[in-house]
Image (cartoon, rainbow, N blue to C red):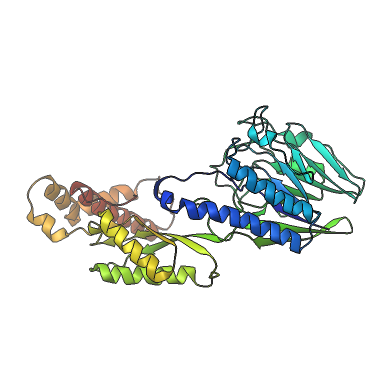
Length: 409
Ligand SMILES: [Mn+2]
């Protein structure tokens, strides 16, 4: 007996900033991913599709999205596949929520209330779940889920933040927050969770998983996206397999721009090489969105501040690499022309001179060597470390005074 666990589809999401131009592609990719999920569910003859919340981006649903979802669920219905769907913090189901009013086909079992409901199936399994009744459901509802120890396959379904999960980056919000201990206490055979958009097992000793978002809907959602095909044999989880559904792949890369590069076309070559390396092995059916952050110290830093030039380079790179979108992010520091500084008069020269004066620098070094805030035992290591700091800050101060600090952007 198999189930397909998915979550966080976010139908109805709109896009801002740079993504506006690609929003049609991203929205289409969400639908294509859902259609692929339906095809996989049918091909594997799963018993049910488990949707762990945030099927919709808001609790208002457009007619377009409503029709799409009803058609997809009907297709599953025709194939004898059930759908178990609980609401999340985005598609929360208060009394006048559109999500609640939709007339879902009869194979769809919804969990829209804030108390655990148990669906018992005579094929010998049950699904226990609850939904989000309001936009800010913060209670640990899972800790009051019923326990079962009758040998019947029991699946928990929920849109919840597991506090200790390594999959979170801490920015997702503590919606319906629970703990590994509370999940463990239920002793369910599988927990299908949503909310965190990154797929993975929550704890190595527990059958609890986040399926992650079905399709990458923001630049943070890197890598393959899809769901888990969960197989039960003799009342136990036999296999949990990740299956890619999305046709969009986000990649984030960084390059250290070579100091010796002085011409834009040389930088272009370095960028193209990086993009080709990062996208190697990715299936040709994927629409690739790549973001490359340019780091390092380069005399091209100021030139690359020019957005027009950057977008020209981006569109060439996109064309040549076959990536749907290339975005360059600027985090380079300008090379400081030290010789020039000492020819100038004024404050910059004075400060630079002070740092340049070896005697003064050595004096500062000796003072800092006495400092206990550097927790380094080895004297040589400590000296090297402080010397590095002085050197680095010399560059920073001078570049700041010249108004050419392009770091940390
Ligand atoms: Mn979500």
